[in-house]
Image (cartoon, rainbow, N blue to C red):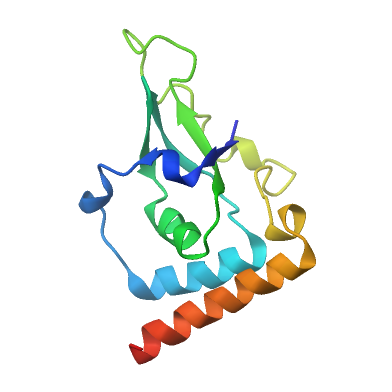
Length: 135
C-alpha cells in the first residue's frame, strides 16, 4: 500500500543508472501539475534510508513543482531485512488497479486549495517555457 513520504527523505543513489528522456519528462510534468502523481514511486526501506528504485522522472517532476511529499510504496518496512526478499511486499502488477481504475490516484485538487493548484500549474508552465527558450 502506498503512503505519503517526504520528497527530501528519498535516497537517490541509483538515479544515475536510469536513462533520461526530456520530452517524456516535460509531458509528465504537465500531467502531474494537473492531476498529481497517479502511480506511486517505488523503493526499499533499509534502516534509516528510503532508497528510490522506480519513479525517478516522477521524483524530478515533483521536485520541480516543489511538492513536499509523494505517494510511495516501500518494500521492507517493519520487517527484518535479513532473510527477506525486498520486493516481496509489492503486489502483482495490475492487482492494485482492478475495477477502481487507480486506487493510488492522489490529485493536487484533493490536496491543495484552488489558489495553490493554479500556482502549481503556473509554475509548470514557467518551467516549460524556461526549458524551451533556455532563459
